[in-house]
Image 1 (tube, rainbow, N blue to C red):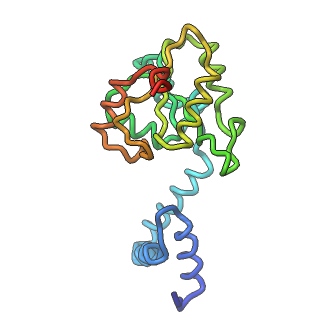
Image 2: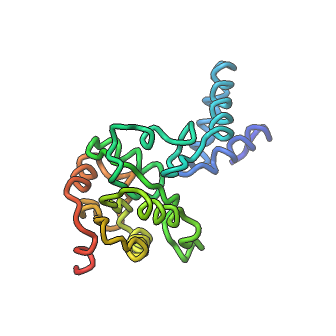
Image 3: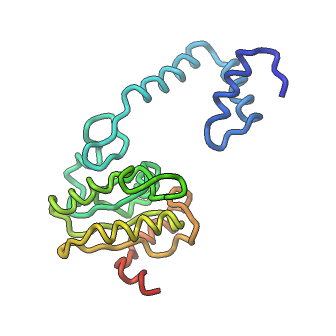
Length: 205
């Protein structure tokens, strides 16, 4: 693609680094911004700068937050004895949209993937084990994508969480193998949560 301006080319190149954004879409977004009022563009860039500089990870569950502890962990209305383990904050948002879950979360910030060089030490697994051992937890729900990486992480977590007083369950397989949590429709995801099954049952299949 030929550009009449190096500034335009650089901007398109940066937008094109975003996931799911090709060069044509990046060009369309940049041209759209150029046609906006200066104040609108300033608000846009300022919001990104503030996000990057001030966003935090909740000290308890590692979900994205404006404060040291996210609104979910800080709520007195949530079931403090129930922890749902997810890959990242997108999955928290997806599950919250179902309105079928009222417990807490634990965000791993990834999945175990040896091919990508991601091991257990790169995730928040040790903190999860600590939470389960030190807090009054009745049940841990594995809500990870039905992929090879998700199943590998599930198996590893099950081995690590050997607390006899804690029930370990996983989503019912309303989520097809190879499917990712964030792309599941709310009805399917909600039913998978409410009809969750003991994780041990999935090992016998």
